Length: 297
Ligand SMILES: C[C@@](CO)(OP(=O)(O)O)[C@H](O)COP(=O)(O)OP(=O)(O)OC[C@H]1O[C@@H](n2ccc(N)nc2=O)[C@H](O)[C@@H]1O
Ligand SMILES: Nc1ncnc2c1ncn2[C@@H]1O[C@H](COP(=O)(O)OP(=O)(O)O)[C@@H](O)[C@H]1O
Image 1 (spheres, helix red, strand yellow):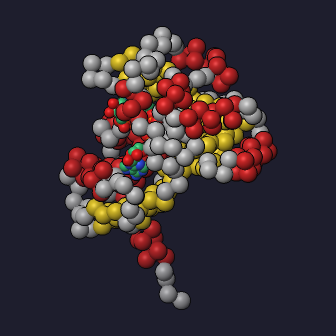
Image 2 (cartoon, rainbow, N blue to C red):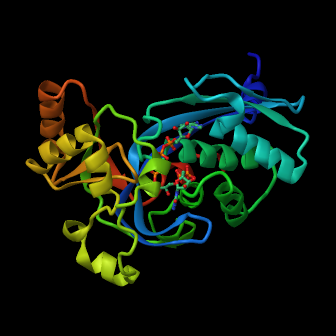
Image 3 (spheres, rainbow, N blue to C red):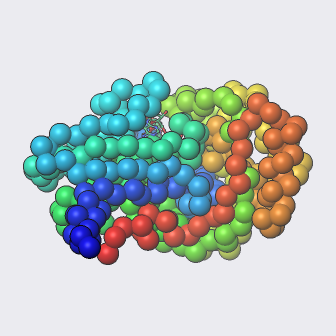
């Protein structure tokens, strides 16, 4: 009988499929504005058991290619490609990769899909290319791609300050959520440049935020987004009549917190029957990203 174990092991080392989970901002306060225009935040990040999948295949010729196109995103802007290109330039690695994505997360929805894709590429290529960079270094590199990339690299639910780069791991409640995308695109820069945006919420301690618990958590972007996007306001009102619900990030997604999976199933059914123009899914909150458990030993 032919021994195929060597060839299958060898090909397993050449390819990797990794999860790129969504995040929610369980609360988000804007506590100031830096000189460069960026806003200082206080936020609680948590992951969902729902997201994209990233497919990596090692190339010996040094090329970085994209095997899946994202509509409206040219190669040089695609965070998968930018993450791989950054890692290659930073380390001088001579290897390359084919990068693919099974896209499930809406783009620009406040679920961090692009940032999570980038984090999974950084973590995955660090492994496939045998670079040996520390998680801390990968997170530093990731921050140059987007403020939300470090939390995905570290893979722990976190209290975040600054623009989201100062992280402290936390254990939050892990309920079921129903996440609704009301079918409109919200511009993050437009939210952050809105004159009426609340930018002066007094900073609080992490202990106080955690002690207040989910029933006290809110998102400072919500009023501004409500005013500019009637469909987001309608989704928040509709969901809030059924379960406590807030905006994630700068939207457009909103999420309802349920007491059980059965309640989440029921609410999801109701959304699909009564609001057919919205996209919705149910997901469990996770304090540990599935990315951390997906890498081969
Ligand atoms: C606010 C959050 C919370 O998770 O919202 P979502 O993007 O997830 O909805 C993120 O930190 C967003 O981070 P990220 O998505 O990387 O933002 P970017 O594309 O870099 O920002 C787009 C623009 O928004 C403004 N911006 C962004 C983040 C921030 N803390 N202050 C800002 O003022 C800046 O003008 C920036 O040019
Ligand atoms: N791989 C990617 N996945 C999603 N968006 C990407 C990707 N690469 C680049 N982008 C760009 O980044 C923007 C923000 O995407 P995303 O992280 O999904 O949203 P958000 O920051 O609202 O959570 C998108 O509108 C898109 O133009």
